[in-house]
Amino acid sequence: MREKTSSGTMNMTKGRPLSLLLLFALPLMFGNVFQQLYTVVDTAIVGQGVSMQALAALGTVDWLNWMIFSIAQGFSQGISILVSQKFGEGDSKSIPKIAGEGAMLTLLLTVLLTATGVLGIPSFLRLMNTPEVLRPMARLYSSILFGGFIAASFYNFSASMLRAVGDSRTPLCAMITASLLNIALDALTVFVLKWGIAGAAGATVFSQLVAGLICTVRMRRIPELRFSFRDLKLTKAISAELIRLSLPVSFMNLIISVGGVFVQSIVNTFGVNFIAGYTATNKLYGLLEIAAVSYGYAVTTYVGQNFGASDAPRIKKGVRTAIFLSIATSAAIGFVMILFGRGILSLFLNTEDASSLTEAMNTAYRFLTIMASCLPILYLLYVYRSALQGMGSTRSAMVSGIIEFVMRVGLAVSVIFTRFSDGLFIAEVAAWLGAAVFLAVTYYRRRAKL
Image (tube, rainbow, N blue to C red):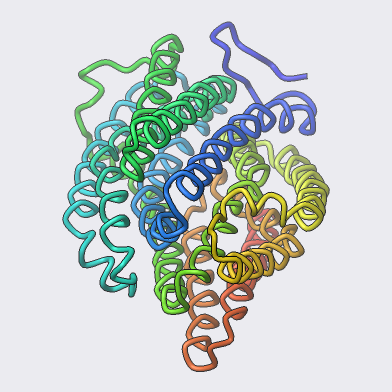
């Protein structure tokens, strides 16, 4: 069984790894289900309530939006690694200072990313070959998301701090609340108020803000995470360590998303119907990797705490358990998606032109089938990457991101010359495989030295 403190945190240095990983990961999975639910509903409402062109416009900036958001998310994950290690060591006195300096560094990064996103949107859209007809909607949607970026950053940081000390339930409650709120606001702003794509973006920002507030209130009730204003002052030693752990993770997310932006720029040359189909499946990407992300957070916290406690046998046993869970879960999800994929994809695609709808649907289902069939590769990638991050080896994660970039972009470049559009789908799976092989080899080498 897990050892739970009076403050609701979870000590993962004791108890059965299977129970600990599931008890930690399941709330995250439910939270991610709701997060993906509102992503799916958001997309469906735009596709059905606005137009298929509006759906395509969202798709043209998906990777761009994810690039900005993932940099901050990676930074928060890096900060949480040090917190989980100190928690495992039993050094609770140093955690408030780490959290305080982490909050200040996150705020500075958020300001920089907000300015970059808002000011750079027109240039980004041109570089990505976004069709002229889609640019106004794409620019409006991204401008609102980037303008309210502090809300997403606020949630990512507070949720990461809670997960680092074993609290995965509060992020669950926050995400459920935000998801239901976002769905309600989507329906209101798009169907009732007729605000179109702007209403969908505004609903997302407001919901993220609410989620961040819920997690922050919970943080203030956990002694280990309750920092004061004096803890916000940056010190050379702690800030340097936080940056050392965080920058490689942020760079990994950046390089992966840059590759995605490059691929999207090629997708944008195949016409609106292809873009809409590609976008519909990309929106299901989150559903495909729900459990992978949750297992990843669980493994990072589990390995981080046990690494801090210098318990190598528990690390080995826990990662083996996570590998088994990941393979079983990914196989089940992949089977369901292949079986019911067309029905799910039909929620996003809507047009009176039957030939356009058929083209978009065929594109979407081909992409979905390829990803679903290879899903265990993605899940193993998450397990090995998260285990290495828990051990403080964030540079390995960064190198894996570079490998993903090379594989994804390398194959996508061939599509420019061959115009074999399915090569874009194969490039995604190839990127997973290249990174997973590298991470597996690196993990077992690192484990042998523990």
